[in-house]
Length: 125
Image (cartoon, rainbow, N blue to C red; front, side):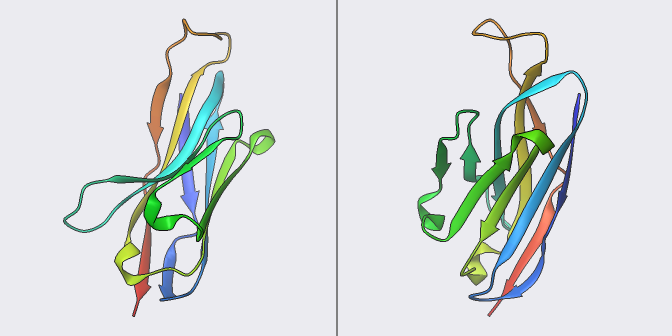
Protein backbone atom coordinates (compact mmCIF):
# COMPACT_ATOMS: atom_id res chain seq x y z
CA UNK A 1 0.00 0.00 0.00
CA UNK A 2 0.91 3.64 -0.46
CA UNK A 3 0.59 6.30 2.22
CA UNK A 4 0.66 9.97 1.19
CA UNK A 5 1.79 12.80 3.44
CA UNK A 6 1.16 16.37 2.28
CA UNK A 7 2.68 19.62 3.46
CA UNK A 8 2.97 23.27 2.46
CA UNK A 9 -0.59 24.51 2.81
CA UNK A 10 -1.45 27.64 4.73
CA UNK A 11 -2.71 31.20 4.58
CA UNK A 12 -1.50 33.56 1.88
CA UNK A 13 -2.62 36.91 0.50
CA UNK A 14 -3.94 37.24 -3.03
CA UNK A 15 -1.04 37.35 -5.44
CA UNK A 16 1.18 35.33 -3.15
CA UNK A 17 2.74 31.92 -3.64
CA UNK A 18 2.79 28.53 -1.96
CA UNK A 19 4.58 25.28 -2.68
CA UNK A 20 2.84 22.02 -1.83
CA UNK A 21 4.72 18.77 -1.31
CA UNK A 22 3.50 15.19 -1.17
CA UNK A 23 5.65 12.24 -0.11
CA UNK A 24 4.57 8.72 -1.07
CA UNK A 25 5.77 6.11 1.41
CA UNK A 26 5.44 2.35 1.68
CA UNK A 27 6.93 -0.60 -0.13
CA UNK A 28 6.33 -2.85 -3.09
CA UNK A 29 4.83 -0.23 -5.39
CA UNK A 30 5.75 1.55 -8.59
CA UNK A 31 4.28 5.01 -9.20
CA UNK A 32 2.66 5.89 -12.50
CA UNK A 33 0.97 9.28 -12.25
CA UNK A 34 1.12 11.89 -9.48
CA UNK A 35 -1.08 14.92 -9.19
CA UNK A 36 -3.11 17.41 -7.23
CA UNK A 37 -6.85 17.91 -6.90
CA UNK A 38 -8.71 20.55 -4.94
CA UNK A 39 -12.16 20.94 -3.43
CA UNK A 40 -13.54 24.34 -2.49
CA UNK A 41 -16.45 24.72 -0.02
CA UNK A 42 -19.69 23.66 -1.70
CA UNK A 43 -17.89 22.62 -4.88
CA UNK A 44 -16.93 19.36 -6.58
CA UNK A 45 -13.39 18.07 -6.39
CA UNK A 46 -11.48 19.06 -9.52
CA UNK A 47 -8.17 18.21 -11.12
CA UNK A 48 -5.54 20.93 -10.73
CA UNK A 49 -2.50 19.29 -12.30
CA UNK A 50 -1.11 15.86 -13.01
CA UNK A 51 2.29 14.60 -14.10
CA UNK A 52 2.73 11.22 -15.75
CA UNK A 53 5.60 8.76 -15.52
CA UNK A 54 7.06 9.99 -18.81
CA UNK A 55 7.05 13.59 -17.63
CA UNK A 56 4.06 14.89 -19.55
CA UNK A 57 1.71 17.19 -17.64
CA UNK A 58 -1.89 18.34 -17.68
CA UNK A 59 -3.26 21.45 -16.00
CA UNK A 60 -6.67 22.89 -15.37
CA UNK A 61 -7.19 25.82 -17.72
CA UNK A 62 -7.64 28.19 -14.80
CA UNK A 63 -4.12 27.57 -13.44
CA UNK A 64 -2.08 27.41 -16.64
CA UNK A 65 0.82 29.81 -16.55
CA UNK A 66 0.66 30.21 -12.77
CA UNK A 67 1.02 26.68 -11.33
CA UNK A 68 3.82 24.21 -12.01
CA UNK A 69 3.78 20.53 -11.12
CA UNK A 70 7.00 18.56 -10.76
CA UNK A 71 8.19 15.26 -9.29
CA UNK A 72 11.29 13.72 -7.81
CA UNK A 73 11.11 10.04 -8.68
CA UNK A 74 14.01 9.07 -6.43
CA UNK A 75 12.18 10.55 -3.43
CA UNK A 76 8.67 9.53 -4.52
CA UNK A 77 7.63 13.14 -4.08
CA UNK A 78 5.41 15.45 -6.12
CA UNK A 79 5.35 19.24 -5.82
CA UNK A 80 2.93 21.94 -6.84
CA UNK A 81 4.31 25.46 -7.12
CA UNK A 82 1.39 27.90 -6.98
CA UNK A 83 2.04 31.51 -7.98
CA UNK A 84 -0.24 34.54 -8.12
CA UNK A 85 -2.90 32.84 -6.04
CA UNK A 86 -6.48 34.05 -6.22
CA UNK A 87 -9.11 34.11 -3.43
CA UNK A 88 -11.36 31.76 -5.41
CA UNK A 89 -8.62 29.14 -5.21
CA UNK A 90 -9.17 28.72 -1.49
CA UNK A 91 -9.72 24.98 -1.10
CA UNK A 92 -8.50 21.75 0.39
CA UNK A 93 -5.78 20.43 -1.90
CA UNK A 94 -5.40 16.65 -2.18
CA UNK A 95 -2.40 14.72 -3.40
CA UNK A 96 -3.12 11.87 -5.83
CA UNK A 97 -0.93 8.91 -6.75
CA UNK A 98 -1.62 6.13 -9.21
CA UNK A 99 0.56 3.12 -8.47
CA UNK A 100 0.95 -0.56 -9.30
CA UNK A 101 2.71 -3.52 -7.73
CA UNK A 102 6.49 -3.32 -8.04
CA UNK A 103 6.70 -6.76 -9.66
CA UNK A 104 4.03 -6.05 -12.26
CA UNK A 105 4.48 -4.10 -15.47
CA UNK A 106 2.75 -3.59 -18.77
CA UNK A 107 -0.86 -3.36 -19.80
CA UNK A 108 -1.99 -6.31 -17.70
CA UNK A 109 -1.30 -4.56 -14.40
CA UNK A 110 -3.97 -2.67 -12.51
CA UNK A 111 -3.27 0.85 -11.31
CA UNK A 112 -4.63 1.69 -7.88
CA UNK A 113 -5.60 5.18 -6.74
CA UNK A 114 -4.26 6.68 -3.52
CA UNK A 115 -5.21 9.96 -1.88
CA UNK A 116 -3.62 12.20 0.70
CA UNK A 117 -5.47 13.59 3.69
CA UNK A 118 -5.67 17.06 2.15
CA UNK A 119 -4.00 20.32 3.07
CA UNK A 120 -5.87 23.60 3.47
CA UNK A 121 -4.94 26.53 1.24
CA UNK A 122 -6.58 29.84 2.13
CA UNK A 123 -6.10 32.89 -0.08
CA UNK A 124 -7.21 36.16 1.48
CA UNK A 125 -8.25 39.26 -0.44
